[in-house]
Each structure stands twice: as C-alpha cells, then as structure tokens.
Length: 224
Image 1 (tube, rainbow, N blue to C red):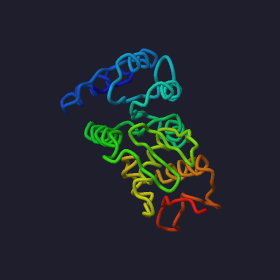
Image 2: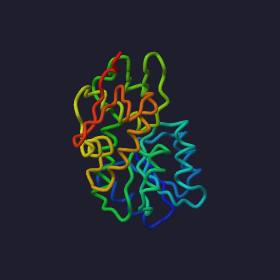
Image 3: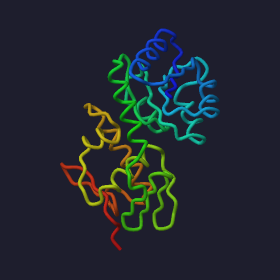
Image 4: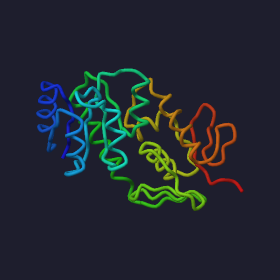
C-alpha cells in the first residue's frame, strides 16, 4: 500500500486515481501528524510526502518519522532548490521529485525505490573489516556500529556490493537515487562526504572510500 500525504485535495485525488490505475493500493492523508500516526499503526510500503503541509513541515515530519520507521519516502514538492533537496535527503527521504511531474514519472520512481528497498539477494556484505547487513540495515566497521542515515546506508551498501569497482556519480544517481537527471551531482558529493566522516576518513586521507579523478569512487578494504 502507498500512503500519499498531500494537503491539496485536487492533487491528492489525482495522484490517488493515477496510482490506483497503475495497480497500486493507495491511501491518503491531508496533514502530517495523522499521517505519522497512520504510518506507525499500519505501515505502508511507501510514502509520497508533500513538504508544505498545514500542521507540520514535511522535513520536520521526516525527522520525527525516521527514529520509528524505515518506510521508504519519496518527497513530492514544489520546492525546487538545492537547500530543500539536501535538507529532505538529510532528514531521511529516499527520493525527491519536483512538481509538476507526470504520473508515469512518479510511478517509475515508486517502483525503483521499492526495488531498492528490497535489497540484493546477498544480505551480508563484507569489505575488509566492514560488515554491511542489508536486510537488517546495519553496518559495522572493526566491531563498531556505524550510525548511518537511510541514504548513507543505501550508498554504502551499493558500493559494498561492488568492492574495488569504480562507480561513477552518474551510476550512483541512477541506481541509488533512481534519478538519472542532471544537476544533482552535488547531492552525491554531500553524501560521500558524510559517509567518509562516518568511516573515520577524509577525501584527502581516504582509507576505504577512494575517489578516482574524472571517473568515480570505489570502496576497498582499509589498508593496515
């Protein structure tokens, strides 16, 4: 089941109809706090979240949601700027789409996020002393649990499934963010920077996460 959180009745009705026609079971809420309670009581498979809600800002709602639920969230909003995009991703959004968008585009993003959240067949990935459990969504480095945001975990798991392989930012945008559109490379850079910090390294002094100039990034076992 999908949950649409959108205060505009016209948009909410149109999305419900369009996604139902495409084979989804759809429920909806016009405000943030009732939506949060519904997610806790009857968890949906995915949430489509507007940011401009009447009772609470959508980004604040995300920050309240993430400690209690890992449900995938696609932000669907009119806020078309980098600040809002980064803030939403930082708060735990899995994807970000700007209004107006077609039902076909949203449906494709929903299917992509649901595929990604299902995870690969191999659920435990090991790269040196890093252990990533995809099903449990945990990552442990040298016996120390890493405190990762949802998108940081997705990024780390993607790279851990391809140890030593150089992956381009364009590939990361397409496969991790499911957003093969231009203008979002800085989002990848920001998340890589956050991930490096969690791994205890920097771009200048990498241990596991190595950039290959002009090509991409790769994850390798830490050198002793």
